[in-house]
Image (cartoon, rainbow, N blue to C red; front, top):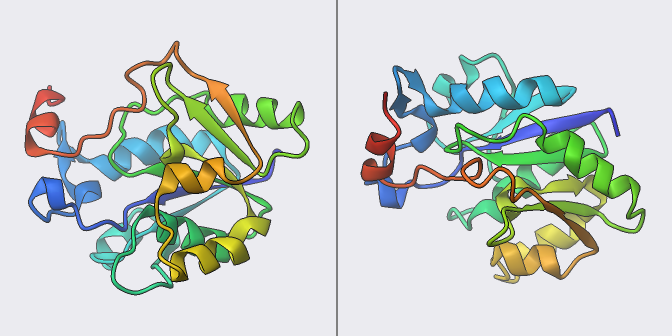
Length: 192
């Protein structure tokens, strides 16, 4: 479990952010994705970024950038499929590009839970109120089924996760860590 690819999901349309590429928006003078890289990179053996636009901007951070294999922006599951397809490790830790306070113990706690649930192919944090499926630690063997479900239009991320062997991990001691900055107002509230 020490060999894990970190994957930052930055492939969305940013509709609630007025169509802006959220990962490249500035928080305290630095792109959101840079905050996420800073917190995720020490937890994983390698890093990928999933982006469907502004590829050159994301490549400037020094990590491989992969785009969705599926057309029409079908959502986060397509980004997860893209990183599973390109990862060279069995396990991939996904995180969204707009969560600058993600836990620095995320990978450790999820892998600890998997060691006690050998049948699980997914580890999911739960913030005390709800599961956080965009922070899934996924096994690469899920890719064929994930591709099939995307092609069939089964795109609800939480439901997809619950339909597969998984373990949920309590992160209620980090209630703000999973906050997504989805709107200009949320971004403004976190400045400074």
